[in-house]
Length: 413
Image 1 (cartoon, rainbow, N blue to C red):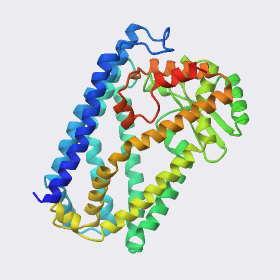
Image 2 (cartoon, rainbow, N blue to C red):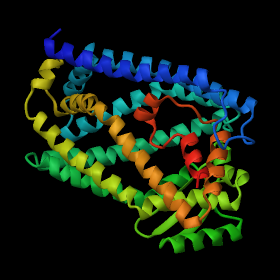
Image 3 (tube, one colour):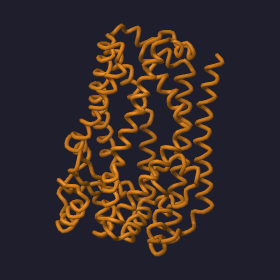
């Protein structure tokens, strides 16, 4: 094995080792502290629920080890075991056009990933989620969602990949810039059309029945300087017992969607507090800042990718016979995952900082910190959240502060 290839392999194994060590430490932390009731959760979480929370987190962690092991094995076989070279050579031998080959190259990889993960999706849904009472799906509904998802992925992939490779062929010297612009506008376009075209393919949305709550929501958002175009209920209970809410939209006009499972288990004040937190993200411009930051990273990343694929050194390192652009892009993507891994704790820290600010905004807007605390407690209880994550796990994977910390801070107000 070439020295550089060996170094990359070691780097990949180190990254995966860190991820699994963090998961293992977190699993042991759950076993050690999972039976303790955090401040504020008294009266909401009993011993039986604590045991379920601990076991649910533990089962998902163990399942994660299995899934991670399979992913590692596939990566080793594909990138380091010669499968990528064989796959690339086979496609080159078909002698299709540049654009057609590019579409098929990445579309087949997407299909392979989809079918490989079907057993994991089935096990997660019909064993783990079913075991803890969350799964509400039938096998028929699960398969229908999978088929619709695959068809949608195919359509969007063909359109996006076709456009990207057409731009690369048309503007070879500056394709990094035009591809970045195209992807930016495509993301913005999808923000507009997804609520009206894609989301209804999977869920049914109906106007909220509680008109009193609707008026309270619109009044609160008006106080925050935001307009609400529609408040809808989503039939989340057809698939899962988990509760949540979200809102979408561009500019000051928002579309709010409440899971029917959330409406069943929370009071009006608690739902208003949850939505006030989401309003805080918009008023503090967290979403805009995050979008700008990610697009800056994307801009730099695409330029670096363009620079790297000008030469054949990557394919030489991995022993690929045909130096196609497609295989170079795959290798650049793989290396970027390794290079950016150390930034994970930084990104999650920034995200948690935004969540603290959104909590503070919600308290200022509603004047009811205990309502938000109760809502978070109920969400944690009903979703069987891990109330005692290990600090390492928080640092790498928690985009939100741990529930116990958020609740404790809110109750001190």
